[in-house]
Image (cartoon, rainbow, N blue to C red):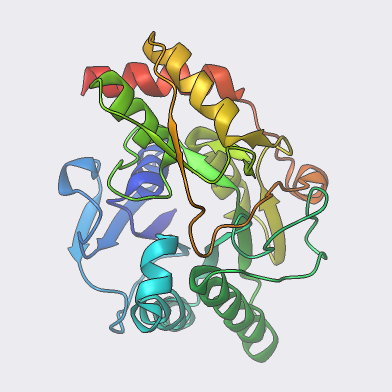
Length: 296
């Protein structure tokens, strides 16, 4: 299969490219390298440097659209920029796929699109984003759904929980595990925004890649991709301390604008329709991520 991966030089995208290349696919990466890194791109994949805010073309059979502005803080400070990347960029990806008669898999967000939840959010739960990032992803989903209706396509939306793993940048606030591990290993102070009781559903990048590959074979649908398990940020910090082998309690500060207090996904539909099940336990995933950072 010939595949295009937008954002393929980034954290999740580069892992997906590796998996596609490993199974023998012909892969092209499209990335503007604003947050991605050229050295992350598999040497067997083609590479095109391009900003998804501008139209592009492809001859791929499947387009995995992962290029995004994924930092919640940036979205609140620069909502116009966030919408250009996440909404206009998605429209350009949809049009590129339409020109090639290609299937598209869109990487959305579960953590930001549902907002605060009272229980694990299923796909039919109310969508009440509390950040500009979540709003933009919701708008992009509407375009995917609209293109499916208007053009008769079967594009798929995957709503990711909070993804972590090797290659995640500690420079972006969403990479809380990367931030904790990097600072703890360097003996630097760590901070928790809020009182530590905020919860998230943390899913390893290997599980995300597995879901993406399954979605590449699926026609239509919107699916949550997570673990269904919520972890407080305070408990997460302790797991990171264990992985690094230090005891260094974090300081606490005021909560950030745009942060949901509770976020966890119900993955029942993905299990039933895609055959997806997260396989990497959080403690094990954090340990392997720390080991990978130490080898870089």
